[in-house]
Image (cartoon, rainbow, N blue to C red; front, top):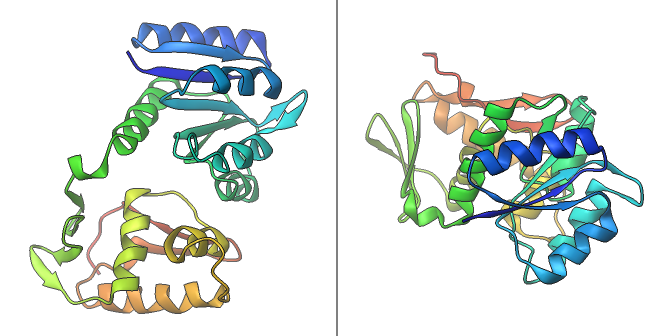
Length: 231
């Protein structure tokens, strides 16, 4: 049985989510603040964390940063739950290291789908050797990109960038977040570098009528759009 750590200070919301998770056959650990959450993490290594943004003794982003600095727990999938719905808030949550972000009130069926998707991903991407979205596919084993089964010639950095975006479709990523995740934390290069590689990636995909998948959100960052259309 998989274990979910539920960190939420609102009793009514926590109780509702706890009942729902149990009905989906999850073992649930509960915490109402950061102190209790870290106590749970000292005693258990959950398969996923549901984390409220605003807690009495800390914030979700601060808690995530601490978890990501722990070599044992740094890869635990985390979904942040919050009433903040602005794009900038989503960027802050994802930049802190959250894997996904949901605004309240939470759709329980959507939450279930996102939990299952994150757990599948965390259990090993090799289980899903090929990512396919519309006419575009990327083989994780040999990093070969194809459009309609026709190979696309692409530089390694563009492939790594596309791989990261396709693994998190429709999620908005800031330039700094992409730098950390694709180029590596501590990389001393300008954020403008991301723009250059996005431009190259889009130019390549445009030859196959697939440039629309790479969307620029002005002033915020980029995302891989799953909507399918012909250019």
